[in-house]
Length: 267
Length: 275
Image (tube, rainbow over all chains, first blue to last red; front, side, top):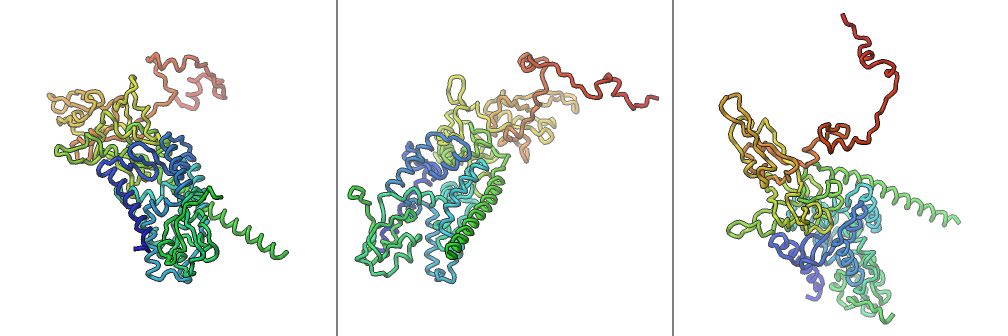
């Protein structure tokens, strides 16, 4: 049980959220309505995705207060508390890419000769900026036109249609193309949350004393460059690209990794 | 020295590569975006901003469609829910993905008095102020989702067959669609009962299109910009005092060119051979 604790917690969170969104349309619930672009919590607290909001503003439309307040609330939550947790605890595409990753490991597709890296991890930041520029030029929120995240979420709520092909494409890309290709290299939303969540208080901490250098954490981590301190020194994983998924903690047999609340006061 | 030169070259090459690839991506992305946002024949919910602004403003949250589907009035007698009017565009619908629209022949807009779909819009893409009447109350009759058009060749009322299905389905009966009586010369003793749509009243709800009895509806709703014409500013109604106001301060313009030397009647007849 120990080695899937956070994995289970994450799956429960993801499915619960998706089910609440689904229920808002299917059964008229007022717990979580809308989609990640913009939602309402308990029928009155507005929530909105910061990247979507920036794109709409860039396209030249002054958004209603609900969206602006919603985007601010989400920004503050991930900036102060969650870090990049959206990606691993909320995003439905994470289910798809995690499945691809799991299959990759099972099918031995992770060997060096198969694992092409023709895209750099920095690409997502370029895409993020590009999305804002294209939104401004075309006059419509550009990433929203092809965001697999909301396409999948809307698919679950309203029906997929041909949108399912994009989800399958991402699965195939992550499985046979680049390892962690979408979430770790291309997704501009991930880039946004990486930048936002850099200084959040929830971080993974590494205890060098306990580490046996087994490297299980690095194998399972979707952003394994953030674990560069493993077996070198005891410190926090401060890289914003860490998704706080907790898989490294799950797989560590020696308690060398644990979630910690960053101690601001002691500093 | 050679080493730092090498580093600089590498740096410049990778920067150039990144910028180039970004530009390539930008061009492809822009082209794609421009293409997918062109879906002109789409009916939007009440109070929607003009299409161009609507596409910018809509944040694709689906709250309008959820409010439409789950409204109190959308229930069968046994309490089960009916299908809502608003559809959220998905891949394959050939509309801008995630935006709301409706298809009258499937489910038309029933023009609810409380307009549940509009106040829930968080972004302002559905504009409440467009639906307020003189008393500052929400008034669904102010909605302009589209405009119904009659194709008289396929409308059986224009053949002389008695049918007023659209007239009776219209929620603003007798105002948005009226019946015009005309003598049927073919039989000599019957009347045509012709449906006439009035664009100043029609909201574009689509109930007429849904009710139409012909195989493919002879009355159908199109977005207003596709179902209206425009005479242009240079036509001024001489019999309309208000229209006359537009040219009150107009100045007489004399165009002088080579033809002005002669009278109009002269130059128009140049080269004409009168036998």
